[in-house]
Length: 312
Image (tube, rainbow, N blue to C red; front, top):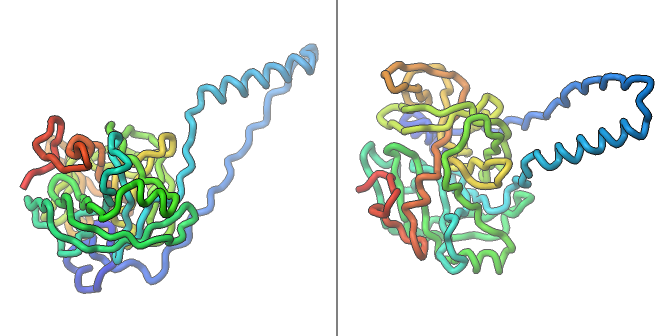
């Protein structure tokens, strides 16, 4: 798993508990693309006509281009050893108790076993709420673990002791909304780490039928392009669609050493059982399937229509 920060002993147990580098790697600086030299207009073309055509092209481009949401740290949280975010479902009410999303392997009581599902477990875990600049503005506290598992997916969802409205009123920060649709290959995304206060930018490279790491197996995982080279402490970071501003996945692992299907080194398994590895490539678990499982009042209902999360 990729990757909470815990004692070095756990690094030998699971990648999710691996110790991060002593300092975060520097963020990459984007290199401007070369600008193509425009073709010369015919000598007979009036300047005004050329200008009008260019203005029209710009207007058409503006209409067709998807609106890009400003992605920052607002609504993300820092845990003691991981990252996370305050999330809401598309139909959550402001009066509902707020939820925090992180990884299953970030659960404070230890990693859920394969096949284990935890529901309604008491928790008083604290989270540092960040504003848009990445400054901690409040400490939020859990009342319980609403749901946690490392089977099929790698998620922990905490229910907080405060509502969305209370958080918004006190700190001016809104929760991030989970997308209720499957992400799309090629989508431009950002992985926002509240622990490191660092944002990674890349694209969805594709989807993995089965992602296997040690004793754990996850279904339909997101593979990033190489620019999202996440490090220890980024586990649980929300993966945000640049165009919609919605959460489409939660960051969780990467192949560090080029080994096959071992801890720290997940392997990809296709529908025919063929195994491949991609050293240095990182992954996330989709979150759209969470949405049908939370109903009125943000209450978990694993028997709800459309809810496919593993059951206890």
